[in-house]
Length: 173
Image 1 (cartoon, helix red, strand yellow):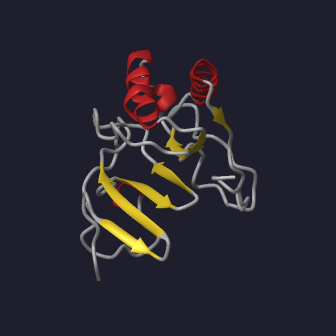
Image 2 (cartoon, rainbow, N blue to C red):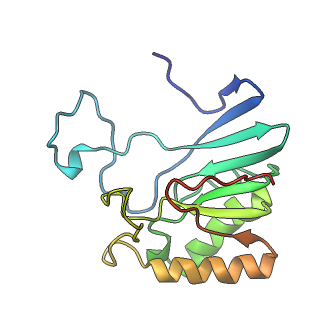
């Protein structure tokens, strides 16, 4: 078994994947690692967060950053130039306006994407064959996240869209 670490670069065919260790969304309810196999049924708190990573995927056709957490490490992505940003927005609607603006600056403005695809926003306890729904309101304010994205992307001239389950998109087309 091989574990990834911050700064690793892995090449698979024409793809290069660079690993960035980060921080989980604010309000992480279950920090820590899982040190032994879990046997279902297990309690939610048994599924620990562990480490959190972002992945820069480079291909001759384009570059994408997958940033699944709605948190940031200041200046972590400065100087990156990506075509597509898969941007974690789960719990972003529950954060202050200042936090949201800092998040935008350190992730989106730092990478300059042409397209933002929100990820990690849906209620992941829901089966994939059903229409995605946001996290429950007591955890996140999803509409506030959408309004934030609409406002920020319009001001920056960046396209954004949700990807549907099982939908294939050509991110560099």
